[in-house]
Each structure stands twice: as C-alpha cells, then as structure tokens.
Length: 422
Ligand code: ADE
View 1 (tube, rainbow, N blue to C red):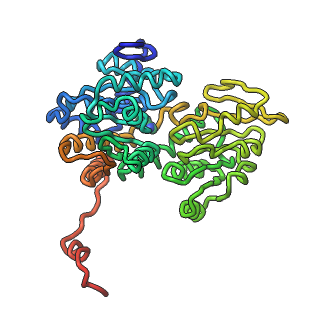
View 2: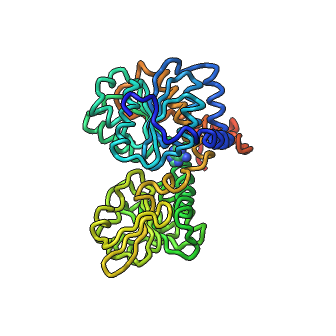
View 3: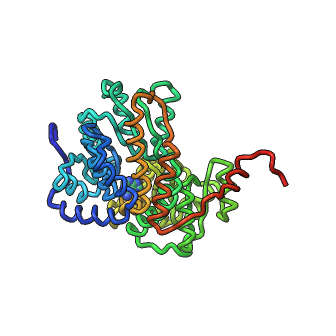
C-alpha cells in the first residue's frame, strides 16, 4: 500500500456506491444548500483537508461539499468495520477523491490508513473519535503549527480532546461539532436510536416485542435507543452510573437497576456509555442462555470481549453475518454482534441521511467559520457558533415544510425587561 493514492476494496463496486450516494443526497437538503453556496464562494480554495469519518453515503456527500468549496480532501475510515466499500469505490472512481478505507480492515491497516490521511499534510482535519488528532499529536506534531483547526464529530472524541486540553497538551484549535444542538440532539438521539435497532434487526432478525432490552447508558444515544426499543414493544431496562440520568430514565418510565441485576433479566443488551467493560466478566457469567449482546458506543471496549473469549469453551464465528456465538461452561450460548463494534454501522448503514444532513451541514459550516477566523483561533476546544446552529435548524424546518411563530415586538420587550411582574 506504501505510496498508494487510495486503498479501497474493489473499484468495480463504484456504480452501486454512486447510486447510494445520490439516494442519500435526496434526503440532505441543508447540506445541498451549503454545497451550492460553497460552489460559488469557494471558502476552502486550495486548503488541504483530511477527514477520518465513517465512510458512508452521507459522508460522501459531505466530502463532495468540501470539495465544491475548493478543498483538497483525503478520506480514511474512523472505524475498521463501518466502511461502505461501494461508496469508497465511487468516491475514488467517480470523484477522484483519495480514500483509504476497507470494511473489515485489521488494526495495522486501520492505522496505516490514518497515516496516509496525515501524509496529505492537512490544515483542517475532521475526526470521528479523535484518532486522527491523537496520531497528529504523537507522530505528526510538525503539522500542528500550520493547522487551522480540527472538527470533532462524536462524544467520545470530544471527551478525549478535552482531556488533552486539560493536560495543556492540545496543540491545535478544535471545534466540538458533537456538542452543537443541531448535532447531538438529533444525530445522537434519533439517528443512534433508529440505526442501532436497525443493525440489531438486520444482524439477528429477532422480534423486539416482549423482549427485555437492557440499555447501558442514558446519554443522548441511550435515550434514543431506549425510546425506540420501547416503541417496538420491548420492556426496557436502563443502567446508569450518573444519578441524575438514572432518575431521568426512571421518570421517563424505564426500569433502572445495576448491570448485575440486569444481566440476569435481559434478552438483549446494548451498551452506549463511552466507557470500558460496562458488561464485564462478572456480568457475562450471569447472562441467560441465548442472550444477545452488542455495542453502539464509539469504541469496542464496552463489552469485555477478551474475558468472553477466555471464558468460552467454544467460539463460532459468523453463525449469521455479524453474529458470533460463544458457549460458556455449562452450555449457555451468548451471541455477540459486530465484534462489539458500533452495531449500527457494522451490521446496518449508520444513521439515515436525513439526520446526517444536520450533522454534516454543521460540520461544513463550522469548518468555514474556522477558516474565516483562523487568525484568532488558539489551541482550545471551541463550541460551534450559535448562528450556525440556528441557520441549520431553520433550514431543516423549512425543508420539512414546517413554519414557526416569531416573537412580536411586545413579546421581545417583555422578555428583555426585569420590571414587569404580575
Ligand atoms: N455516524 C453514524 N451514522 C453515520 C452515517 N450514516 N454516516 C457517517 N457517520 C455516521
């Protein structure tokens, strides 16, 4: 692969990928609007971008938007199992975009692909999980002083970057795209809610009605999954470590208990905490025969897969696509989906285009803001400007044919006064 201009599974898949990119584009009206303006204004003329994102049809439309704005973009995968090989092929063949991503790539190739993206010497990076920025700080620190900024797409990545900033080791400005309202309130909640259920159903074909579904973590992603599982007729149990979120889950009507209690009760387990070993050895041994376990948090660390493998007396790979069976001493079978990686991207297609429309319009506009403000930015974690969020939300509403009221002059005056009481 050394020196290669791209690395994808098979360029013969390009035509199919192209169709899927166009299909997704139909449901991304806000991003399209941004692309039309970028095409005229060229805010990124001649700037090098390296994006480390899930290589999906929706990401392809983001990359084309950056390219329309004049950027020279290289794309690599942000997860070894999330790449859509046909989309990667279409980007290379039809759009001449260097892509380094193959579904199922091993650890070594995954990092080689990241290096290929950084060899492009970007001034803007886009990350989904902070792997690219992390590598930049370790092995490519000579690029840092020329960098304009990096965009971070996901909760886990923002947590890592804030940790880097807290240690005073962050060397580039970072925009926490995940924290924008137009991202996490919709993508994390409704996107993860739907795509996680979609991945589980595609992998297993199980009936959710009547099942006891354990959702670990009640952040925006957990809230989305819990609500969708309930909508499918499941009895949902939530586990949490945060007292406020646990209370929220309880008052939203879910059963709340410890993982030790839930382990004995659940039929299906979904982790979305961002932390490690949420389903650990002590829980695995309590699971019921036939329990299905999967993860929809960013990294494959939430289930202690090493412990599962050590405990198992038998391991059967691919009893169905994306399903591995583990037999524990005594004969119980546990089914692990998508090797414990993001089940929504491993076994399904990730979030639908309509919700990625908002996330990626926010990404594109946050990048434009960074370029415009490049002289003022310093190495710290920035929020997306409120004006960007408002613009994305307003345009999404109008694309849905929804009109909302405006404050009258009288109401504005009332809201800005302190002396009008009863
Ligand atoms: N993250 C979750 N779903 C996604 C998608 N469809 N495209 C890119 N990133 C995603």
